[in-house]
Amino acid sequence: MLGTMMKWICILGPAVVVHALPTLHTYHGSHLGSRQQAAPGGLTDIDILQFALTLEHLESAFYKEGFAKFPASDFTALGLTEEEIAALQQIGQTEATHVSMLLSAIASAGFQPVMPCKYNFGFTDAAGMVATARVLEAVGVSAYLGAAPLLNSSAILSTAATILTVESRHQTFIRTVSGAEPVPAAFDTPLGPRGVFTLAAPFITECPAGSNLNVPAFPAIQLSTGTSNISAGQSLAVAGAEGSFCAFVNQGATKFVPLAGGSCTVPQGLAGEVYMMITSAERVCDDVILAGPSVLELS
Image 1 (cartoon, rainbow, N blue to C red):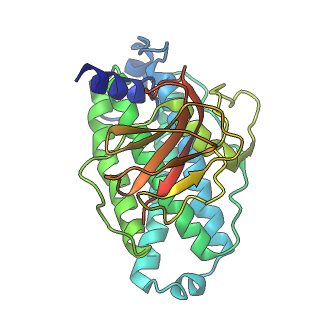
Image 2: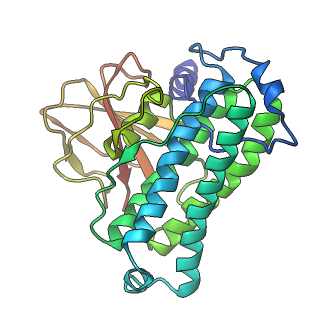
Image 3: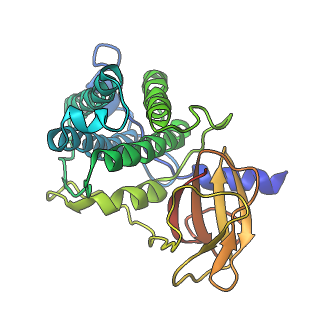
């Protein structure tokens, strides 16, 4: 029981991402600026919000660039209806609204908000955009969950919880139009900042001066089998892997499988998006994570 609790704590801490902030009439910037009590890991609420803004910038840019590149007819060709295309566009609009809210709130607290970076989403077709959106929304929910216990302000936490439900709807909708199970599991999984940034970093090419939050990414996992349509019992070949275990984080729990001969086997009982990491010990903490996470999509 104690081991399970420690694995959960390691996954949570120090997660620092939230996806929204209360409107200014419910939580004033001056009050925010006066509550700079550091969370575990030395993070203040402002640090957490700046990291949130970094990710919201990325998500907003993702949808804006994608819809600028691909016409509605490309999504119709995938089988989406006009209503579903409009709903997908609405997701992008809500992400832009989150950006505006965070910008205003951080600035009103007397801090300089981080600016958007330059991105390369590797768009080749509308199908690829939808597939990437599915991963981004799943990571967003996990990042947001990881931030919840670290916020000092109950006002921010309460309002952020109302936004989390919207982010979860994003994920459910995209899973549905992708032909995946809408609700694959009973629980979602929190993810720490380095794990989140490891997943976001491949999309970021350059950030303005002062907008680099100095969150180091872990090395990426190189899977020869890819990350889609993964099934239990499948052997995953990990190129250049050095470590003792493959950790599969899913539904708030972690399953460890020995890494032997450069490969490990996907365990039973996983569903939906799964975070895979390479570790040197049977725990998921920053000091033992050697690579990852990588997002696996279970078939």
